[in-house]
Length: 266
Image (cartoon, rainbow, N blue to C red):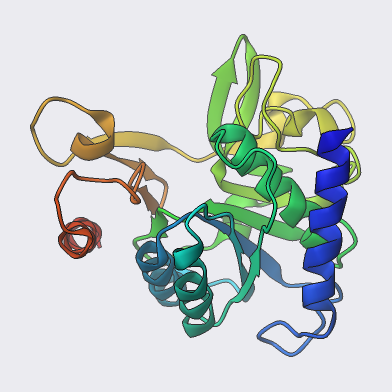
């Protein structure tokens, strides 16, 4: 009950903020048929701005960009909104997330708000979901990636159940029961694990067009995944955790290191 009440409240709040606005192409947010790219931001304006630059540089699709700010640091909110605006995007804030300190549930809640406020009653066929530390590193098309499939992304398997990681996920909205779809974790699966249950038809794994994923070592220290490796996923690079990536004392130095890694892959 608490979840439904909180979700409904945040969805209504986001819809009110968007009601008088227009997407970057001038259409209302719900009537626009173009690809929607939705980034969930968390406490790091710098990576949001960097993602914006690389989306504009490399993503060849005609798209509208939305930043859903799920930050716990209120001081980050205005810079994140400014980063979204500089990238030609629209920023909406999750004001009251009942799972704010709980990691995956918090992220799932933010995605559920975005889905219900931006997608469920919209005219869009394709929607892409991104973590804020996922970046295109060469010209690419998300619409071409999904092709005629229901989903495109990186395969995850938990307890013999398949789903796609929601940090880089393309969805054909028409292939889903949009009212049933949820990104909340639970029942042995992480965020996004229940998405296949909302597929229309048999919902088998053949509905997923897999993006090839490879871990790449970028330095040699103590083998910690977040600092020693990045993940290549098709034409995209995942820094795994840009908000805390590389333990250096100065955040500016850390972002310079992030920039250097990204530039080395382009």
